[in-house]
Amino acid sequence: MNWKGVIHHYRKFLPVTEKTPVITLLEGNTPLVFSEDLTKAIGPKVYLKYEGLNPTGSFKDRGMTMAISKAIEKGSKMVMCASTGNTSASAAAYSAKSGCLKCVVLIPEGNIALGKLAQAMIHQAQVIAIKGNFDDALTLVKNITDHYPVELVNSINPFRIEGQKTAAFEICDVLQGAPEFHAIPVGNAGNITAYWKGYKEYNDIGRSKQLPKMLGFQAAGAAPIVLGHVVEKPETIATAIRIGNPASWKKAEAARDESGGLIDSVTDDEILDAYKRLASKTGVFVEPASAASVAGILKLSKQGYFKKHKDARIVCTVTGHGLKDPNIAIKNITEPVVLKADIKAVLHEIGL
Ligand code: AN7
Image (cartoon, rainbow, N blue to C red; front, top):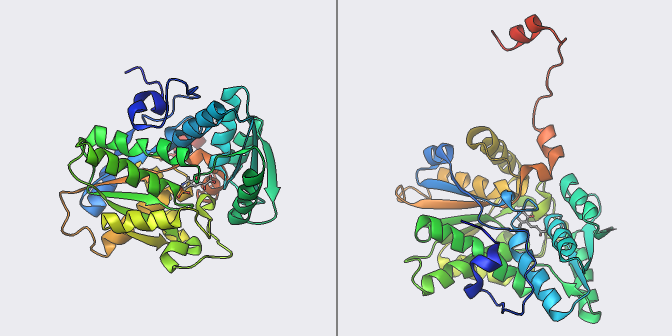
């Protein structure tokens, strides 16, 4: 197939016309990777929707192709977002591709993974670090974009959700219908909202005969939806989901309740275990936030949640690439030994 990006492929499901200038980096069409290891551990067949393989290394590109295309259609000259990192990387890249948009991003000082910062900067966004967290940054961006001719490209922009729902379409297209369960990390809660919308739309037109139960997972130190109240000082190693007051809170609860699913939390230790397990036993390298979905189904499995569902399929969205956050990877491995450039020494070391 000659893949031309999510707007081209799913045009009839998206609010675009022939007049919409399509700004694309050929995002989407990401692999659905079967995990033998997780299937053995959990029971139902486990698939990973490997969103780290999008052009900027995260699922944000699906929404950004829409948000940036629509911003240009409207005549905007400047876009702005608050970000824990991936949104800023994606907004910066798509703005660069447009050739005509200035991109400004507000990030929480000291809490953004190295790769994401590098991306936003090399794509020439104007990057401003805020002495505060993501929620503070988003409040500022909402304020500015409400009062100035600047387009907000966070996931409260409905075009972001429209683009991101295409991931659910792709899963149904591969599995010939929705899986029984869909597990997903939850931060600002845009993505769980988008998947649920996508699954419902495919169900409505008969492309799927069922809807999945939506299983959302927040980091324990940043779990406002699970706790039922705003978390003033969210903390987690999974900086992408270090969010204490999700913008799409109510929509995430609707996805949970309409689907008969749940939103639960996983600890940083559980996230890191799943992170290492994915890399070492399935060969899929994700950033810590992405591993929350896998940590979540491992937790539920231990509680017997999937006991009566051995024939079911679980799709886990793994949202961002592991290379985004190299520091976490390096902290979680043992340093390589250093040897002389000597064959005997190397053979001895590898046990030959
Ligand atoms: C890898 O980039 O919020 O629940 O500003 O980067 O839709 O927010 C990132 C979120 C999961 C959570 N996994 O998705 C941002 C930002 C990764 C992420 C999420 C994010 P939402």
